[in-house]
Length: 363
Image (spheres, rainbow, N blue to C red):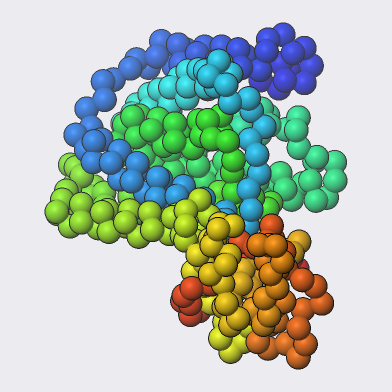
């Protein structure tokens, strides 16, 4: 692995990855055989993994509206998507079959934990070697980024995948990796959480999913105890409804959206950490505005101030605004093309975590 990556570079990276793991799978099967997946709980486990993973992705994209997004580096034409995901898909399947074969056989070995630990080291080492060319490990900050963004998340991911495989076979591990590994080649944008917060999320989510699965698994006869399906379905519907509403409110793609208040200029009407529900206005609706309305406009950043005077000339409107907590009116005029909408409703406090996170990231 090391020789091909840094010395000779015989094959393209994708082809080499596939050939290396295919050879590993063939060797493993030749040495120890391959057992059919007889786990009875895999469907239930896969449902849990799918639901929790999708809800996590939705939640991260919701918070992305507050942190911002970065554009995908990959070409999103159909041909490019297929050429990117097919090698990754093949690699995922082969790797998880290797993991399954080793884990299945070592269930009967003593002590199996040492063999499984060695296998996890192999997977983590592979992740490190494949990505190390793009890491700035020569700098101190690069070392910490390497550990935080790649090594620790790789350890957390491989521990989780091995745990899944041990209790429910290879299909659950493949599903998990399809959700998280292939989205990078399919989605056009990604939340921009920054290095440190992204590192925390990459470690925290596998840990959280492990805890969820650990509570659900029952080791007696390696069986999966089914929870009350009605309760699960109702909980899922409620969760999706809440998240769907939040997506609508924060996306800015619809008539109404949510905006977190980050300054005290409108206190006491709008406090720091409150969320304002904004009604977007088109040009034809500007004539309905009146003094006293709370205007939301773009002046290099999104500002929420009250209208104190309206100017109209030849059917074109402009506005003088002022923050309720400010002594003077704003030192500029707001023109039509700067208007976003008006703040219609206020939800107290719920934006506090977002304000706090933004402050920490700025520090």
